[in-house]
Length: 285
Image (cartoon, rainbow, N blue to C red; front, side, top):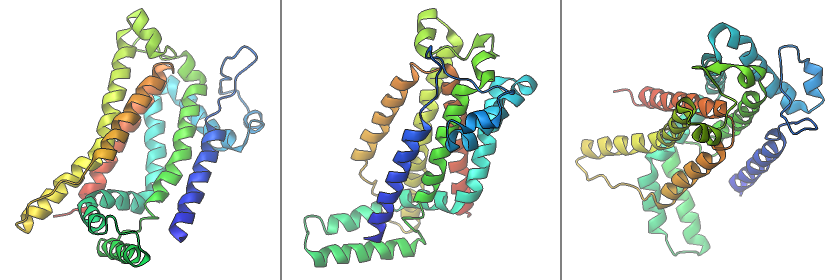
């Protein structure tokens, strides 16, 4: 019951953050109100604490870096820095999330054992066996949510910062304005923006699938070490979620500035590297 309550609280908080954080302020003409180096903190504070504490410093960091390193590197440096800070606080949570992927076959075996048994005694035995499995691998299933809980508002903050940064709206990347949407780029035959958009879809897919591929690789290693046949976990629901999510992202990004596609390319690459590093550190031979 406690776990269900915590999950409910996390869901409500994340929903509240989404509703408050994803709203980008616009002027009377419908144009996004940009944050420049001259924009005062107090001006953004009037929009709400989320915009002031998260969006404002990220947008200003991009604005400050852009003249020095270019817009692509500015977005990359800020994305890398914020991910490094988040990882420092969520390392154990990220490890737990990857371990949860690895023990999927054992979890599904327990679930199959009690499939169709809805009586209280069977449900309690299943819960006890699941808890024993978590203890065996030193996993806190609720703790694995911490990473998502912390990263979600940061992700929204970076999204808003990229959309509102004056540097992003006015800088050029390879001679092209990143304020152009992929939909406009297709009509204008802008190869640079189209390539960034396609790379965004590819890297998003790789970012989503990397933990699953690593879990399967580790599962095969474990099975071979014990001279057993590795049984791949059922992925029906996960496959639907993966491709459904990709289609949704691809559709939304068509109408958003290409700068956001570039941000997600960088974010996905960092996420892939983070997953590989955590896997290496937690599976030292």
